[in-house]
Image (cartoon, rainbow, N blue to C red; front, side, top):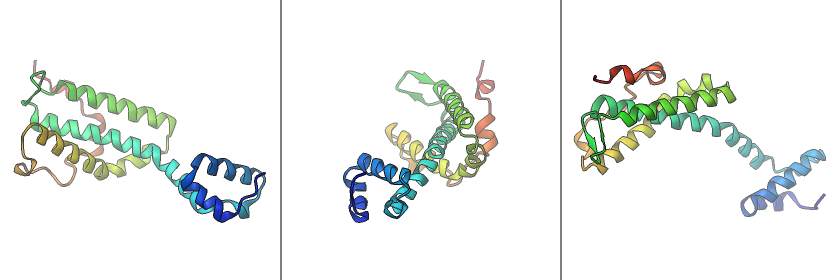
Length: 166
């Protein structure tokens, strides 16, 4: 094992993360617990636990964004290519599939994601404002909801294909 002080190990966290991780792993395997950089190690474990939930929240944000666009901006023509938001339907379906895949891999997310609706809505509303600005519409001219106008159930199950006009 390398000889390194606890202070040197803490500094290594910012300078060479892979080496920091390798040394901490060696220390844990050797049960040299007093030398482990616990502060940063615990932060990394917390980040690992949060990473998959963050992904699920991002997918939920896409779903909410496109549901809102479907309900409020369906008649807009985007770049002359898309009318009626058919791409939004596909996007919602793809994001739901990705959430379902995350749930299969990490079942605990199923109980956590419903509680993240407002956080996902914040991401959605940011994207909606950007999209409107790109279209030349000032988002300040519209009253976009501060709180999510959809329930989690609606976000995950509403079938937009049934709402297509024949």
